[in-house]
Length: 400
Ligand SMILES: [Mn+2]
Image (cartoon, rainbow, N blue to C red; front, side, top):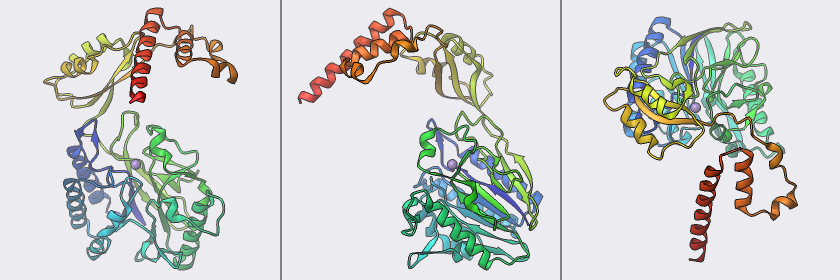
């Protein structure tokens, strides 16, 4: 069985309020070409179709139009799409039966009958090729199983049930694939900010059991194998979602035979616009703005200005950077600001026991911190006056 594994499209995403529709359409064109060239038996999209749970009408139309066009172009390819934590499971599931009429599977949940999971509606068989158990992202509250006491055991129990189901129904001759949207322990989360990941608990790799020939994962944006044979994999996102995703974005073309390790080809997706941290190495703000002004006017990248300096940024720094990119094609987003490493940083000065700490006033604590950071006295004074101003405002507010 040959299939394309992809996930985390995040359609409808705006990056620092810039609309990304043209970039997603550019990805769609490439995905269609890949499907036409490779003629796979299936396309698997493992969650996070949209960036938000209530996508705009135009994002939804873009998705529907593309999927139908893809289906017309490669009619023998079974399309299977599941929802992720960014999607609304119930909204994605609304048109499940309508999609099914066209032979496309768009799946938002796993049904329950008398408290037991009913996987039959999530199992898609491609005759003479193999089968796919399409599991969307599932909220833990829904997974709740009274028989398992430990919190963590919910997922274990759920996937054990899934694995047992597959064992019962899958014919022995053909491979079986599991689709899921979750965090697996020890995966490489480069590019993600922890709070984004926080709402999904990580699971052990072993919960998938041995009954699947390939586990097509979504949720983590960096493409990676989790096991030695490449059987358990994240395809990664095809379009970078943020500036820290500084790695190639791909879709995977996978070929599997029962009982053999998969053969995977990661095909790079070319971005319509790059996400650039500029310049490569951080420089003084003034210098960075000067360099930005020299950026070729046809460079259409998103820009995160890379600044390192001791003093604070000027209060109109965003305006200065924006105006340096006026009349250019690039899209200025944000400033990445770092202070140089301070060799004078005195951590010893910061250590206090609890009773010493509780005796200090907030501005004493702040003062000690600023001194430990070896900030110049004039700067410390300015910060302390800002803090006291805040305290005053807060005191007035409280009296009301
Ligand atoms: Mn995602």
